[in-house]
Length: 460
Ligand code: AMP
Ligand code: ZN
Image (cartoon, rainbow, N blue to C red):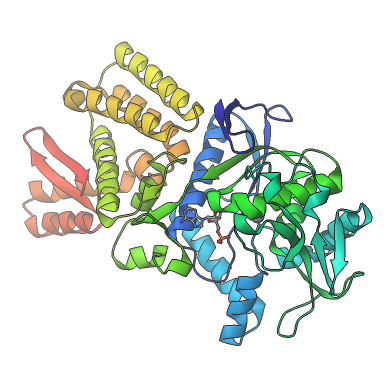
């Protein structure tokens, strides 16, 4: 398996630290508002990567932090005049609801920054001790000059560094490459914790270093986030972690390009965001959102449009209709060896595409090729053939995650039962009951088709 490592700017063959296991850290949400679908592009991509590793036989330990204290969360709590924890809890709950809707696998741990202050304090103490950090006006800063690798991830020319100049805010751009804050001295209107180096609260970057180290160790396999995390956040995480531990922090850095609207990053500050709730209110299917977000390559910008979302929904419907037709196959007979071979070849091609820098469009193309090959031959399939194709789709879906359980699982017995009841009613000339059953199924999105070969059904 190979993919693009931001750190080396090359496609690299993946080698895990401990055989068969992967330590994975993904930067989680800053819970000051509802996450938008730009954020979810990154989270869904991370989920796709994780699912593919699991599909490939790895055991993945996934840690995703929750940033529940930083400049933005504090500002929001002060604006609303409510305690910080009240604001953050509301958005943490919303986030978990969205994860479920988008069929994102749960992380093993969701550590919250406010619950890891002691770990951050010890990390800062080590950095001070080793001379990588200094105190100034009640705060503690990291000295970028002290780390000769500083700027490697974001590919920053060391001539551009402005050592000695200190920056207090959590976010800044490449034009302001300065000593960044590890611990912010106490200010009125901000929560604070006692510390040997003065009461205060953590900067954003130290949070991820402390929490990843606690749950994955000083050296682990993969760290992911959106491209906007490369600088300064991930650059600073590397500096803090490597200086404190004296060893490599992370082997592979994977970054997802932005979701944009008219060529501008979807972001709260630009006001061009859609939340999952906005889309739900427009009656849009979360699985179509997931399909849209995974279907273009992670290193390319993805322009969000409603037309694009509709097309994603249509592609998804093609798969669902195919599945419903397969579930309707009734013919007896053996499994066709040619079809078995085609399925095997398709599964391998799917795997090969995904293993090549997560070429998901290639992988989806392989799946649709098989669908197009089988679709015209549905009448010639035996039930065994249909089961084999369904099984194949189910395996692919463990990676793609675009079909929910009910759709990828074999025909729900109760739908078949309903169809049988309706047939019985019709034979007994109880057309009112037959119509009622048809209407009930329609409500569940199931359409019945009376054909010369009997009753067929499909999803609307
Ligand atoms: P934040 O809550 O701002 O810390 O962002 C959470 C995650 O979403 C980070 O990994 C960001 O890089 C990512 N992100 C933010 N905006 C976008 C966007 N428009 N497209 C893709 N990822 C994004
Ligand atoms: Zn982070």
